[in-house]
Image (cartoon, rainbow, N blue to C red; front, side, top):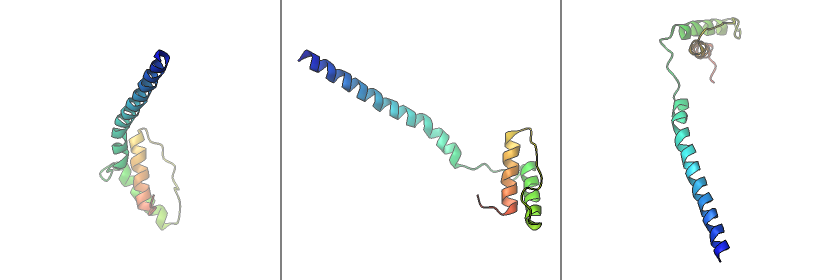
Length: 92
């Protein structure tokens, strides 16, 4: 009887531990999901406007990314790409 009780206590402890672990993972992951759902507004960004102009130009001349650009900041690259896609008319 004592051995059976010990096993039940361990099973219960593991079940509670896994249950709390799952709740913690969901609570930690929730803020990152909100960040991904909202697309950043680059409309006033200089590199966004450059990408928009070049995307419109490439669309008018039936080209696809005719210029290779190097950016120092990751945000500048993202802004340029967002502008290019919008200017080129791609719906991604």
